[in-house]
Image 1 (cartoon, rainbow, N blue to C red):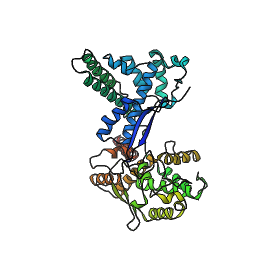
Image 2: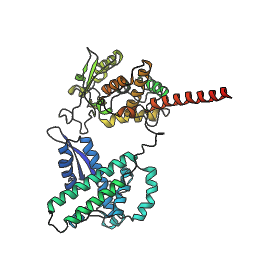
Image 3: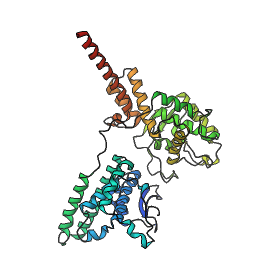
Image 4: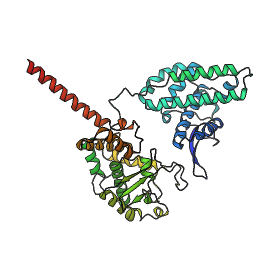
Length: 428
């Protein structure tokens, strides 16, 4: 078995623009139709590089499914056809899979090509395992929608080339509508009704435990070396104190921080030529100016003038958080690894502890503070939206305050139960 025959890679253009491409791993050549789709349909609409990358990963899933089914999409389009219902169902099933779990056959070995063909009955038998080992339902649904859009684009492009007088025009137009409708009907449920295991912020006990572990002097601190301990401790405190996304954190420059006023500017710098990272960290929300506490500002200044300055490579750029040894700007994958190390070292920390969980945690703490200060709901919403970089009409607050809302709902339920039970006893 070999690796996935396709790969989505990001190309950094001279302008600094990050352009994802789907290419053959063997030849290294980008696939023509997906590349044209990314350029004319996604990039032309000013979609972010991360969005284009996500769309192309979905398209890659489509091509992997078609390889399994031995379907030549180009030939189908020439014949005025697209997919039959069973093939649509197989594509949707593949969207539920972790691509890393797939077994791929080496395309250079002709004698093993038959192993790429799976019957629809075997695919159905395999579907029960997919439910247990597959991706999040929301991810699967997003893949199906991207694939539907790509197939519709392919069909539209071919129809425009054929012209209305071509004998295959009507057949292709009709089948494209049917296939897109069939995919719409098979978009996996997003799981929004499951409110039991949804992502939430850390409990007060877990917050205290995390704060204890990341201290550079802690016996449970998972890192070695002065720079790693100080940097990682500071990063967790930034996430905890400001509720930033990991991309926002990794994109902060020392020049974004005003130590006279203790402020930091969170800026969106899409396709920054000055950022050497291929996968450029970036802000997804609005630019905003955030205050820094005296303690956080002091720790940050100490890191910049101390262990960060000691790394020669860190003096060549302005990014705040840098890699050990090289001093290069810290990558997004390295930010994730910090939390992996925390979970491994301290099994008592939550299994879902990630940089993004800290954003949920910040929102819970903010809600608790607003409750204590008895801030009106409308004012609280405006304050939260500004600090998070959301528009005032955004509904994101409900997503990030699940734990606080659940605790308030539990309190109300218990109070109601107590009133009803006591009331019933009094009446008896």
